[in-house]
Amino acid sequence: MRIQFGAIVTAGAGKAGGTIIQRGRTGQILRNLTVPHSSKLQPSQAPRSAVSTVSSSWKFLTASERTAWNSLAETLTRYNKFGVAYIPNGFQIFCELNLNLVTFFKETVLSAAPAPALFPNLNNWVLVANPTGPSIVLTWSAVVGEPTWFVFVSFFPLQSLGASVPRGSSRQVLGSAVVTAETFDVSAEFVKRFGTPAGGVYQLAIEVNVVQVSTGYKMPSLKLIVPFSVP
Image 1 (tube, rainbow, N blue to C red):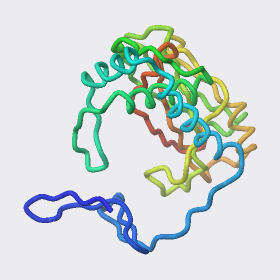
Image 2 (tube, rainbow, N blue to C red):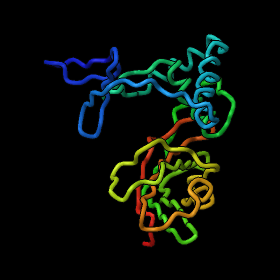
Image 3 (tube, rainbow, N blue to C red):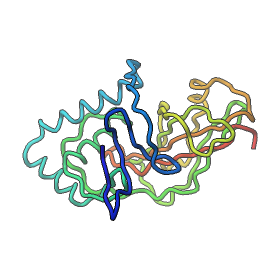
């Protein structure tokens, strides 16, 4: 159980006994704690395997490599569950960047701490979901962006027309697009996942991640949800 104290207790997160507190769209939620189901399917096993691979690699670093990761971490800021800023340690940043490399690019673990990244400037994100085809195309404008940065897309389950926030877990599609391309056609991956559903019944929700292949730096995730119908 995690408690954030102010003049009075203002927020909680975590579990205690048979109860769990978590943040929802309308504030803190208190519910019964259920026994989690651990799936044996590959999409569920892969993240756990990646965490194990990356975290265990830390012990093989030299003393100078660990010092470099700690020095890099001192220049960065992260936020906890309550949105409070903190300075991470080298191990945390080592795992963060390498998990991105392993998860998105299937790259080997990076032992040398990279230099701070120059993040791209991307805007005008537009997702078009047309049931004719179907045609699912994501576009954006790259004001500043090097070809070492790539765009990845993950599909949420198809959403009801009344949903304003994506529900369920997103699953990454195969392939990616370099940021300088300014477009990513994921129509074929959509058909693999959902087939050819009727238009005007659902909304399509995606998660967009932009990751640098040489370092593992990642921009904040972007979620988009649009009607699955003819514009």
